[in-house]
Length: 287
Image (cartoon, rainbow, N blue to C red; front, side, top):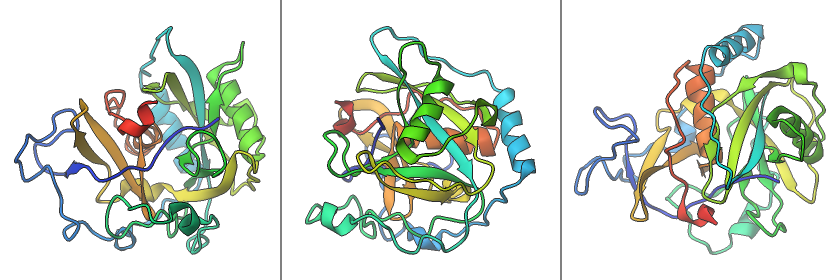
């Protein structure tokens, strides 16, 4: 079982603008609420230096996680789930072609913005995380982006579930000793509390997607989470909470996966412990 994604256009404000905070969106009429496509850089022009995949990175991330007081969500009306944030090595240029039949899936459906076509290309290089595209024939969240994960079985911990789902979905077996720590819980509108588990893969690894659940697995460089246009926050009339967007490749990732990836940037890479549980999901993900 996996979670999240793609969204039609909504008003946007610049997360990097002075005085703007995701919990306090700019009001109606503010020039910060909407960025024009002409001002927004093309994803492939947002090049950053890749992050070396080495023991120094491992120790830094583990230290950041150990020093943070993790926010747990207890809600008896929600089911508990876990996702695996698997950190691996990757090579620049290994992802020039998206292996998924994206054009077939999208068809005539309009994309959220000009320049986006749903493909995950040009994102590899250095330290990376594994991102899955769900199989198109699934009954729920078909062809969407997700991290390996799912509901906890009776008696399981979040770590147990994340490692089990990692094996079931992408055929990767890792011991509990590879776990670096846990991120904040994220409560979803669809009735789950998700615990992200950060795992050190120890190399490139060789994922083999379970065809009934996952059509492709991508190595996305951690440097992509630090793009100048990321994160972004959008306003929707259905909620006072801002919807988070994480631009990756030629697509946008939204909560809950987007909220987890924002934690990876803030917590793991930058040692910044801002909460994400008040960041909203797009309306289509509320069910």
